[in-house]
Length: 277
Image 1 (spheres, rainbow, N blue to C red):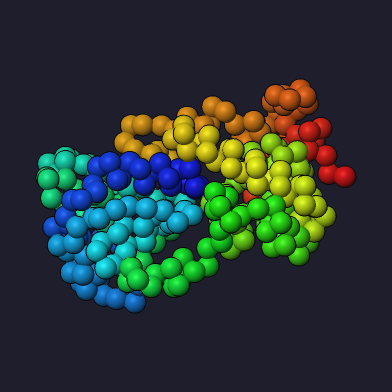
Image 2 (cartoon, rainbow, N blue to C red; image 1 turned 90 degrees about the vertical axis):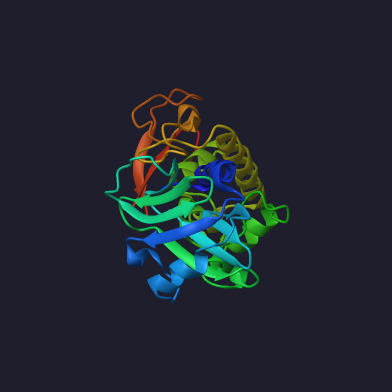
């Protein structure tokens, strides 16, 4: 699943290709993609003729700013955006939406698993509506600090890995980066959130900012199906310390990296560096 660095890379790529272009026509080929209570015909007509003023991001949500409306795209597991010249022949097998744009461009949304979502909402009020109103602050939020994490997370007796993945508490961290953040902050993924102290949460926040920024700089992690752009891979997977490194030696201590399940999620860690007690 694309996480915060991957979504940020997609946003930057789309801005470089389609910002300020006009949507000439829209075709939705998979109706369940639309989660707003609106007919497909009305959805297509509302967007038609609008200029893409900007593309931004809130956590893992991509925000297309279309004058007084916003189109909110969540990629979920395997959603992808592609930009082609209008004459390009492309694989239509998993295409769910086609946007014909000015300047002889087209923007195509494809989703193998069909879990991705579109919400079309008023720009003035979308932040107070589902899905954005449920999103917690991301690590780069200037108001976020260790005390906030302590206050919001230490009430839970769940494993800290599970709590880090809760997008209502802190947003943008998915499975890959939770493993890397906990390794960097030397905290065992099965440690209970209620057992951590202020210093622990300050380390988690510091590691979150460092690792997410580094991944953004490298275009994210190309693992499984994510690509930031056609034919271009992210590079952060080359710097992963624990994730996907089962049975390989830890870069810090040499002990073999282990893989377990935490709340059903594959989890990689070093038992020596990330002690449980």
